[in-house]
Length: 466
Image (cartoon, rainbow, N blue to C red; front, side, top):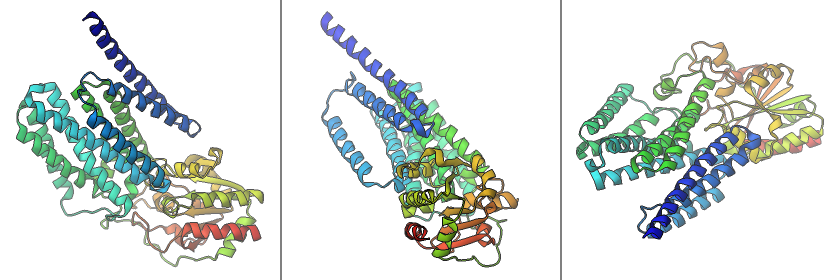
């Protein structure tokens, strides 16, 4: 008996040690991700931390059977491996949105299962944690799926709104929170629990549908925060320390990132969530006159070949065209000719935080060549050619010059101050956000129409022959 008790005690402390180690590694991983030079190491720390958490969980005293757990490990590992192998880096925002949905749904299922089995017997504190977990997990699940659908083009990227939508959403949220509060008072009220569950799923849809694709970086980080908080609540509900640690880290880091994203756009979170940015009702944008000036590839190649400095400005169009490797190839050709090449990175370019950094890192673009907005803007007047690859709002001078614009006050990359601007676009459309960009009509701006990857590939050969 004494030997058995010692073995159980050792197992308990070993599990708690693995959880503590996992928490430390998660913190080190977040610290590493704060800078591109240490990001890879940070990811390895986080991976090892997750392995420790899994090992500890597999040895948990409450496990009575391993059949379903092993099946889940095999199935989940196979799906994760397939995703890592086949999903291109350009689809990273969609994959991240799905990951948020899966993680949040898992947390919600744990809460639903626990409440179904135990109900009010869990006690007020655990029921509170479960209700909070299910509420956040459910709305994050459907919200993340809608974000995925917008990013993938399965539903329109523009805001989908109707009259009185904000009032309806507020009423829906109030009803959901009302059910939550009622559960705190009456933990045995199963009807209120399941009504709250359904309303939370619906609220997730209604929350993200009116948000335009241009706001996806903020939405992605905010949904990440929700998923983390749901996981933390799950930890409280089932007394799992590693879920509490990991969920809290994820939740608060995601929220801080959301605030930073909003600051980069000069907007509040409430404006992002309820402003329907980019909708047809937005007013105040510049109605640019004149015609966009189309340029031919040979002239662009000559300009770039004999320039002193060229600045590439990547946007979501570079991601959709999967053109990051060709951009690096063109930069190498220019570098061989003695042209100084820089990359201007806006914090909200793309569809998730750090989207452009990830794509350029995949193409082995050195971090020393990447310049943030504050660093590169003073350099644009000395730039001979600024090459905008599928970006719209982050280079829109209306944000600086037009106080009535929906994006007024948002810090932008001031490419219009360059001596010449070349914009790579598929056509004359307004872009994902639906806002007109007066940059495209300026005298120093030329439009190079076509697929960005194809245009850049031909530019490589043209510059070599110039």
